[in-house]
Length: 253
Image (cartoon, rainbow, N blue to C red):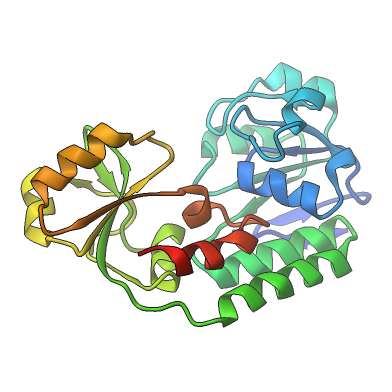
């Protein structure tokens, strides 16, 4: 069958996939939660949920660097990637030999569609539809407005989540007003951070592991701001982990 991914690419699948390689941690977890764990033969070293999966599957590299010979040995009939998280040159190389389906996620609507699309690809439509409805229900409960924020994903340089990112969309869902107006992931100077003077400075738990000393430093830099270390997975993973996001956002203060 011919299917269309979220980049509007046409992908040919001769049969329903039985040997799947996932190059995106949040989508690996999604496959498992859709009951497709037995079909996953390869994943990345960053695919940490569910925790046991890396022990029983083949790690084919990271999200940017792939062990092509190892991938070849697995004979995948579907590789799942993401426009932002994966190396596009590597994806293009893989697509010359295998069906490669790419997601492109900017907000909850894209995440819902990705879940439904993968459910259709793998012939578990009802499970995918039920999962999307569960996630929708969690976000149907009002999340109180909190105030302005800056969300940092990296230290030295200070890298923030800007406009046009999934994180930005979830900040809005969580009741925050993102003060960073630049697109994607701009670097901020300390002086710019002080000028923005957000009500909240959110330090993501990933990809940079912010610690207590960073909280103390930023509190000295922004004495009027509330400094919070937040669960980065619940702001940036766009698969089944979204089931936990809305409840987490409601308890943030």
